[in-house]
Image (cartoon, rainbow, N blue to C red):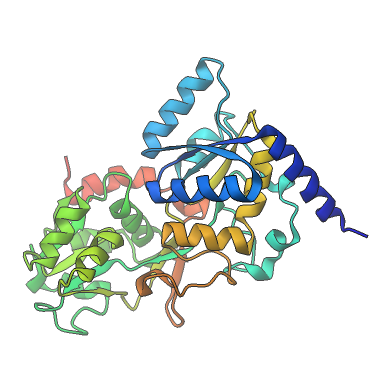
Length: 340
């Protein structure tokens, strides 16, 4: 006799095939879009309409559609912060706890922190990935191995004006880093001391990464890891440093929410449950290039800096009590680092 969840899976799969479609807004790269289009078509007979863009633009688009009485979207995938802080209070999201039924998804032992990876206590958002962020990058021709082992080493006078830092006053890796520093890893006093080092601040990750790669800046701070990795693979003398105080993990844009009044409810339910399985987690981890929140998803296809390591303190910044501080921290960053 089939288990009740098996019957439910067959029912949802059949209804999803009848709906034939799924609509997702995604605040990430195009490679994830291409992967999911192919997998959902081949695996479930679902045609995916996936719009890729920046989170603020997608939120504006979604609001305009709703104001016009158009309910076109099923799933919203982005980073933490805006869905729980903006969309949920506006009634644009539905909680997901009641629609997750696969035992594999609900098994707490399968997950990194021993629980289903909810971002918030009300179940409006799930973090599908838990990838470590290595915050410091160095030019190994200038910075000796072990010379920077702590965040406090960056306060040495020799690094004044020598640190390239991603802008912390706008949503992105710079803002994510200072939020982690201020709320869990260090404190605001540390950030004030760092500001006295007069870091070179920019919103252009590639330009910052190139500056570190060429030795214009010996140290990079909170620069997007993929930019540093690209130059490293090209032969630049770069390396990553995780300070002894630890760092944070994040799902990046792989935080999933269910939109209220979704036009394809069965396809949305199927996608959410599938994304929480080992199969779905593996495909999503490969496509993003980041480590899954699941313990049983392989990591042999990932860059070493994107894999959680034993002995390192990791802080889950995607939890709502911390991620909700990202937007307020923008103004704090402007004040501390005197950003206009």
